[in-house]
Image 1 (cartoon, one colour):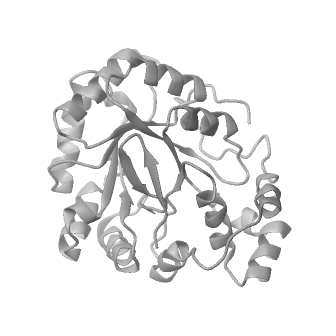
Image 2 (tube, rainbow, N blue to C red):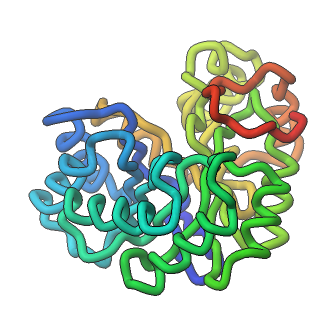
Image 3 (cartoon, rainbow, N blue to C red):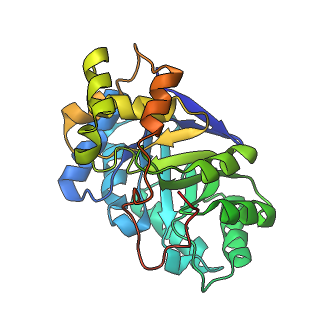
Length: 277
């Protein structure tokens, strides 16, 4: 059974197939492997330059359109009125779809008024380019402002999130507005996180992989969606196999306790002033 998150009208599978930075046949094969494994959520973006491959993976697999939740994103230099709608249309052409399930503003842009960007995003939904809309890499204050500006429901904020990085402020704000918080980099590039004694010990105790422990921690949190990326079919299958065990409140807290001030790994020069972690 795939856990799902209900968010302002969107029904989002809680584990999705991340596709950055997959390209070419590797990307097509990863989408196939994910759909074969039971994933029903695929995440891409205009900036990933792989929407065509994601679309080919969906088409050649043969899955019914309404059986898969497809997310894409508009790059931060294209979020002005007119540019955003054109970017969304270009994404649909590359994907070979009539609409996406979720269209996100990939990053905020201090040079483009948020009211303009949110207005354009809402217009894209009204035009039928996206069934649902949301944002990505928005701080708690930005989420509040975006919701106040939107005349269409916002259903998600996609941010970096894993045990090394607390996102309590953003998650609390998303919950206040009935939104999902989608975690990218949910296993924090794996290495150092999987070496933590609490993760390693829980994996041994429960007979699970370290990745499964971390992903279970994600989906046991209300309103949280996670989109791990892998090109390895075995890992893709394993990342979705989160049934048959759960984490206690104490175990959840011990994993959350790994958060640290320098836990963030994605820090481009155009990033906003992040919430304190």
